Amino acid sequence: MQVYVDPAPGGEATNLALGHLLARRAEREDSFEALHVYRPSGRSVVFGRRETRSPGFAAAVRAATDAGFEPLIRATGGRAVAYTEQTVVVHHVRHEKEPIGGHDARFVEIGHRLVDVMRTLGVEARLGAVPGEYCPGAHSVNARGEAKLVGTAQRVLRRAWLFASLVVVGDEAELRPVLTEVYGHLGQPLDPASVGSLSAENPALEPGVVARALLAAFAGTSPTLPVSALGDLLAEADRLAVDHRV
Picture 1 (tube, rainbow, N blue to C red):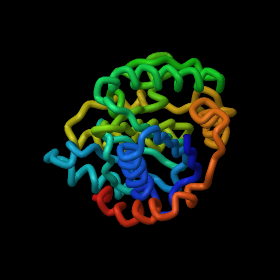
Picture 2 (cartoon, rainbow, N blue to C red; picture 1 turned 45 degrees about the vertical axis):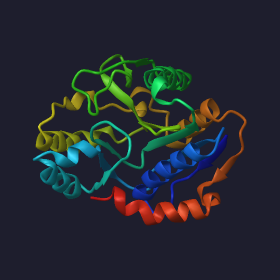
Picture 3 (cartoon, rainbow, N blue to C red; picture 1 turned 135 degrees about the vertical axis):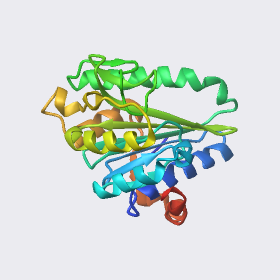
Picture 4 (tube, helix red, strand yellow; picture 1 turned 90 degrees about the vertical axis):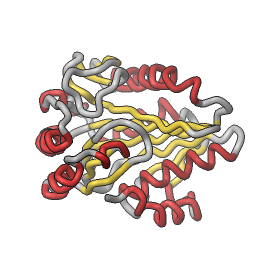
């Protein structure tokens, strides 16, 4: 497995494009597997593609921008998410001959691994949907069934998959108002109380500690490389970042 750390210097749009390009590389190369674990360098509201067709999308974009969050569009499925620098993102890609058949099983298997990581960090995490959550899904990682801590999403290619995990470590109080406004414009239900964070459950946690725990769980003893080691692929991601901007 190839393991990369740190955010791309081009910002979150470049990180999103890089995840897609790594998945494309996995599609071309047998046995290719890579992990990109990073802490975002800015604040973003990231929309799903289908939300761009919503009548309220333009208003939702304005609400995100007015709140100081860069509006972006991701390649994986799901609905809008918001995050700050108090977040850890994991993009995991792997070559697989028949990735569609394992779609649901990956949500369960990786979801349980994330739950295990959260528990090692002193958080009583569970796997399952949270009533009124943002980007709703049956495999959210939550606390007490009430507060969403980690959201997951996938993109399945012909011979590979990209699995994205968004681990909210802090700043939930800043995420609640922007998500409430964005979801209101999109005509989607949201309970602000469902927006949680790891530090709300265990105040000792911070992004660096969480990132190291995630690397230990998903990368094992694989050596880590700076994202700059991707060279030409990183440069291509920077060029394609425009595809992820609104």
